[in-house]
Amino acid sequence: MSLFRLEHVPTSDAPPRTYQVRTYGCQMNVHDSERLTGLLEESGLVPAADGQQADVVVFNTCAVRENADNRLYGNLSHLAPIKRENPNMQIAVGGCLAQKDKGVIVEKAPWVDVVFGTHNIGSLPVLLERARVQREAQVEIEEALETFPSDLPTRRQSAHSAWVSISVGCNNTCTFCIVPSLRGREKDRRPGEILAEIEALVADGVVEVTLLGQNVNAYGVEFGDRGAFADLLRACGSIEGLERVRFTSPHPRDFTDDVIDAMATTPNVMPQLHMPLQSGSDRILQAMRRSYRSERYLGIIDRVRDRIPHAAITTDIIVGFPGETEEDFQDTMEVVRRARFASAFTFQYSKRPGTPAASLPDQIDPDVVQDRYTRLVDLVNEIAWEENRTLEGTEVEVLVAEGEGRKDEATARVSGRARDNRLVHVAVTEGEPPSPGDLVTARVTYAAPHHLVADDVLSVDRRGLAAEWKPTVGLGMPGVGQPSA
Image 1 (tube, rainbow, N blue to C red):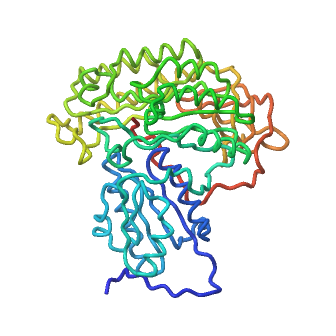
Image 2 (cartoon, rainbow, N blue to C red):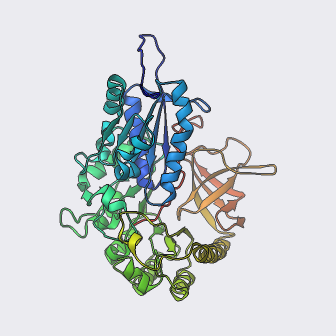
Image 3 (cartoon, one colour):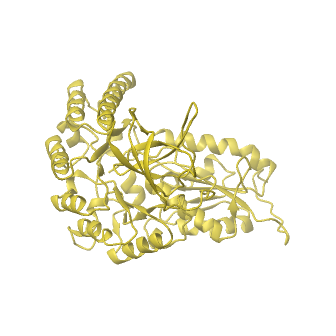
């Protein structure tokens, strides 16, 4: 008999079981975890308290980078002795790595109770119960999406901000990316469904939404409307009470002037754009199967800044793609200098089995990749700091986020995001401090490479919920900012 067989004796007066969801990967994974917590709570489970070992631990995994595998199996190993001591505990693994590895997970970690894929999130409660009753691991991996995930119950991480999926999957074939094979081809929701969800969220106290998609500005391709994304942005502008609209991540190939116009003319669409570059070398972009070149990319940035002069533009960049020369790398550095990004997620190329790039010749020596990565990060930080310093003395509107802010010596601060998505730490003045969801207007007094400090508070628009509101325990965001489409 396996040491990890589940021996469960139900009792009528037992306290409710507890859960913890551990999230890795992109914003789509974070939103998926909100659905998982909603499903678990609908099934009667409650969040585990800080420091408490949960009865059900769910890993929502990412497969974009090579260390994702090591991270998952390392975490599962740490839970093995706990499972031996408490066989009633259940462990579930979902997300992109589960979709990729399938039954391999229970072969490597036989103490796992449930493995479920990206297309069958809604099956988790049933699979947990089946594993409990049958006393054996349940592996269910659907190959295609049947029900759009937004139809599932959701326990949001934030009371005032929400993710809204407008599409799932991706039709691109980037040679470095494993996501299309794990998330499937693009599936679009109808605009009416999306707007109805946003209106319901606003009625529930949400003031900011982020529209999500693997390739968000390709929205409409499934029902043949190339202008659908720009129209959706404009429609968001007519929703009363919706203060801020963001979106991530767009693909340069699908970025149209109509979208730029919608951003510029819709007041609640924020002056912010996260648009993956991946490489500044046209030769490497071609090898990546990225259907644009550096000048087209820079041209989009120029047109955005022409219409929205104070827009903050951020990006994703991969260093060390197979065959990358020093000249190719310098092309990337030049694009970074010209684009002047507010920040950038920078990554060392990670070979992923199953992607075309994994079998390409001329894989780059790790020491060379590390050297280039260091130089790139230094340049990105230098430019970001220069750009942030131009904001000293200006006024910013900050949406206060959940959680405590920074403390610098005797000064307490709350933290949040400016309209351009820069992180801002705002001084707490005398009187009642701002609550999550409040809009604070303050003057920037100091700029650092990755944040702003605003000690001069000018006004507080109190729109938030009570300060005692707590996000779901155990739902974290480690690793957010993986390479995007």
